[in-house]
Every structure is written in C-alpha cells, then in structure tokens.
Length: 432
Image (tube, rainbow, N blue to C red; front, side, top):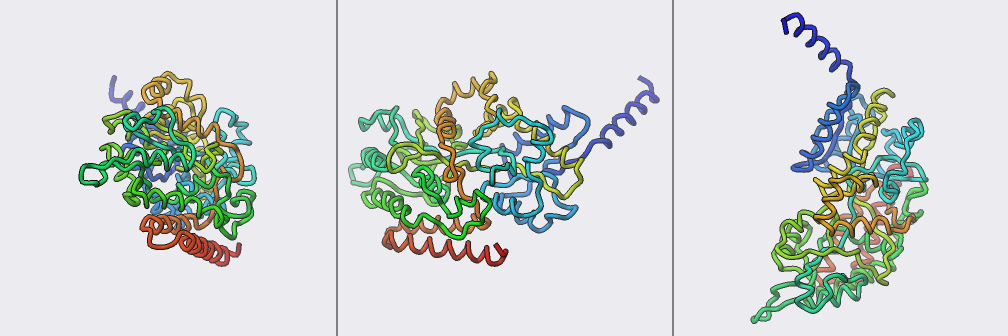
C-alpha cells in the first residue's frame, strides 16, 4: 500500500471519527465494575460509526450528584448520567432531564423484554423517567454447613421474623469460655434494609403513595410499624444471637465467610463474591417479614438518565447507547461480571447466562424475589428529594437500637420527628 493510499485511508478514518456524535457519560462505577463498563462502552463505539460515547468516572454517587447539581442545565453538563436509586426524586424534579418514556414512544421501543419490577422503581405517574442499569435487591445469605451442624434444614431458610430469631439463636455457638465463636446473624447498619422490611410487610415509607403519583411526600408513615422491626432486632442483640459490624458491608461479609456469622442480609449484587470467598456451602433466601408470606422487595442500584443540556441529535445518540446497554447479550455480560440483575429478561436465555446460573444457583433466589414481588406503590419504593439525609437518620436509629441504651419507642419518635423535619424543610425551600 503506497503513501497516497495510506493518506486517503487516514483522511477517511479521520472524517468518520469526526462525524461521530459525542455522548459524554458520567458514572460512578469503580474498580472491576468500571472495567466491565468500559468494555461495554468500547464495544459499542466499535460496533457503529455514528456515536462515540466517552465514559467519565466522577467518584461516588454522592460526588456525582453534587457535581451535576453545580452544572445541570449548562453546556458543561453530561449528556448521559448514572444516578443511584435515592437520587430519583431530585432528577425527576430537576428540570434537567428528558424522560426515557419520550424516546421509548418515539422509537416504538418494546419494553416487554425488560424486567417490569426493575422498570417500576423508575416510573412516576406511570411514566418511565430513567432506565435501570445496575439493579439489585436485598437477600438473605446463610451458611448451609452451619445449618446442618445445628439441625436446621439447609434448604429451608427462615421466612418470618420469629423464624429468623429462632434460627439465629440455634446458629449461635459459644466456646469453652462462654465467648461467642459464631453469632447466629449480623445486621449491616444501612437504612435500605428497613425500607425492604417495610415493603415486604406491605407498608409505605412515606405518604402520598410513597411519592409515586407525582405528589410530593410530606412525612414518613412508619411510626406504627418501625417498633416491630427494631424490637425484633433488639431481641436478638439482647440474647446475644445477633451482632453488627457497623456500616461496613465488607466487614460483615468477611465475618460471614470466616464462619463468625451464620446468616445476614446483603445486596443481591454481593452474592457471587461471598460464594467465591466462603469455604462452605452458601445458601440464599428471601428477606423475612412478620408473616413469612413474601410481599415484595424494593429495587436498589442505579439507572441511566438522559439530560436535556444538548440538542435532540445528541439526546437520541445517548438513547441509542442506552438501547445497546440493555440489550440481552450486553446485559448477560454485565450481570455475569458484576452480580447485578440483567435488566433484559432475554439475557437468561443466553448460553453464558445459563452457564453462570448453573455455577451460581444461589442467584436464582434473587431472580425469584423480583419476579414474585407484587407490584404496588409500596414495592416501588419511596422517592424523596432528601432521601440520603432521611436514610442517614434511619442508620442512626439502627445504631442506637444496637447500643440498646434507649427504649425502642424513643428511638422511633426521634427518627420520625427528625425525618419529617428534613422532608418539610426541603419542601418549604423548594416551594413543594
């Protein structure tokens, strides 16, 4: 090949690259998650000649939303952004996004291939505002070998609070010095789990139908229901069958994998890592509730939002990438490598996903949870403009309950009052 040919080829390639529409994509995936996301972006960019996605890591979800608030509505804003579940209310009301529903209708895109339970979290007033991407829910993880050791059926995890407390007591093991060698259960100090308990008990978190009809919530609604949850946990702490390693998820996971804890609640995205790190058989079960009859779980994780800071062509280009990112093969790859649910139901039919499910059958429990969740405003989960602050108050309540120095009723009154003040201040400042 002579120089003129090479030059002509180079000019052609340069023209092609320049002709691509650039989509700036902000995200919060780090470590191995970022590597998996970067591969998806790279493969997309190589698959067509019209759009070039630039994936830019912005730090944690909290850091990302802070940056976005500072420049939303300006030309410096990203065209596509990943936001966590509790940022939904802010994004929805920000005036800085274009609802995903608009692109779905314009493109006559069939959403029937997508998991409705995952879509429902990001629907408000029946309209889809963002596209779920990395989704998970709460799940019970337990040591099957420990179950066998104490005479419990390793294939029948507890379903009710009373069963959970009973199993926790049986799983607790003391050494010759009467010190605890293995706690029956452990609780991660994270408010999301309380949201799961309430939803599984068919109880709203806030009024105005959890904020799902478009009306702005004005107060929390769990004052009568939270004492039962905290009292259940307090009972296990008091009899020594349960403990907590605080807010650190990995500390609890490490304690479980080292045999110091018999069971605990985790995110479904953590299943694979726990199995790989545990030298015993790991089981999974539904999150418990009062009756033992499963009502449903609330989706966690994050979704993709298309901003209105750019022209229609760029927005449609961002939509084109979103469609690629939720396609069955891409979602199969994403789920296998991250532990998140595949958004696309057809991903389960791919050979790779079938092999992964065979290798990690525990993940079938997580799939069953979202498929058996009863659709309602309760199981959609609450949306609040100040959810991070309200969730922090619930974490503080969980910590106080673990310390055991204050009565449960006093803890409940405090978290209700402080949460309501935060919500009402937000509404007042934003004229809601």
